[in-house]
Image (cartoon, rainbow, N blue to C red; front, top):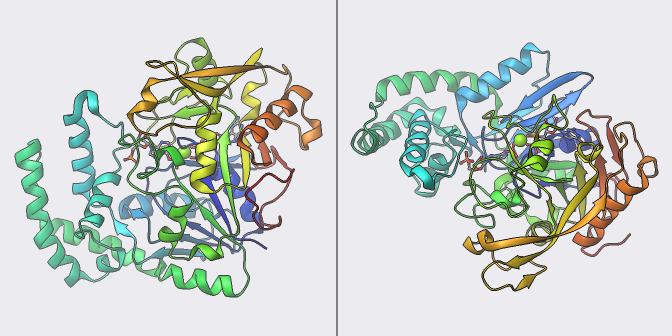
Length: 443
Ligand code: GDP
Ligand code: IMO
Ligand code: MG
């Protein structure tokens, strides 16, 4: 048994949901620990495609306890819309739990997110406009509304009476946007609270009891390490802590209960929104990466924006190993390379200004913009991998490519994904059943 964090090792959309769904077959509890409905998580099972934004990707297994942890921000309207769509499809919500300590995204957060982005012009972040930054900002400023406060109409009224006039000043004076009405918000959001209340509990206490009962717990990250507020490409980041450390604060557990951390990376790289992306390919290669895999083309699940595409970056990969303490890797979307003649991998950076070469990230700050990738080229395999179910089924060139990534990041690859469907996966080792964590490569 093991308690495992599933973390995005790149810029988000790595295929975390597919990996979480796969590992959830052996998990008793699945916990989302940060982010909100900025996440877009796709799982494909038996010809059915599920898109999750707030609900953990373990929900497809009846009886699995699925939690939205205290580190999350919840838009009640979005949560109920997502839940209703899943209930209509016959999903079981008996194990669904929502932390009373999670923060609530209110309509003024959505309005401020959109208005701030519009006002930034060229400096925009390219947010998902789901109110994520403003909700976390209120949490840090200690003026946010928690889910448990939403459930108590008197508490909610007194908070809104103080908050709404202040938000309206910002909206009206700074952005020329119509104000919100306190009474209307109170009625609408108390209405949502009535439906939410049956899911609300102290999720951290349940996790602790599950640990004592030696259950398997999966912690499902949203976004990715390079979008982490502290460790990502600031300011082009989200406002939460997607990296492994965030799982402890975001779920309300201590680090000693974590056994393993699996990093999920695509066999290449994508990014949605603005910000540095050293290996980005804007021409033919980028377009081919974007279009390959259609009908699952590289388009954001939440906003429908085209994802920027580029080659795998070992420098950022090694950074992600360091920040998360990754002890194993899942490489997804290998099949996207099936028709490529050659594949490039960035193995070092050259500073465009000084000519200096780096094999590790010199700084995650603005210096990243100056880095020119130095590539190693691998031959393609020009055959389909989507029916491969073991590592040795893969073409030799594909095996070499995966082995190179493992060696370069000094972390074993334990899962290789060769298609979006649950069974299009090569499981070399299931981390839930694997040996306890070692920080140096053992194979
Ligand atoms: P997440 O946000 O990290 O969970 O990833 P997304 O769901 O946003 O994006 C990953 C996309 O790739 C989804 O459409 C998945 O169905 C799809 N996908 C996952 N693994 C594979 C794979 O191995 N091959 C292909 N072709 N698609 C995959
Ligand atoms: P999943 O969980 C990819 C990006 C946005 C933007 C930045 C800040 O599906 O991997 P925000 O709305 O969070 O304030 O936007 O972060 N972003 C994501 N990119 N996948 C995601 O989630 C993302 N969630 C946010 O595009 O650049
Ligand atoms: Mg996604």
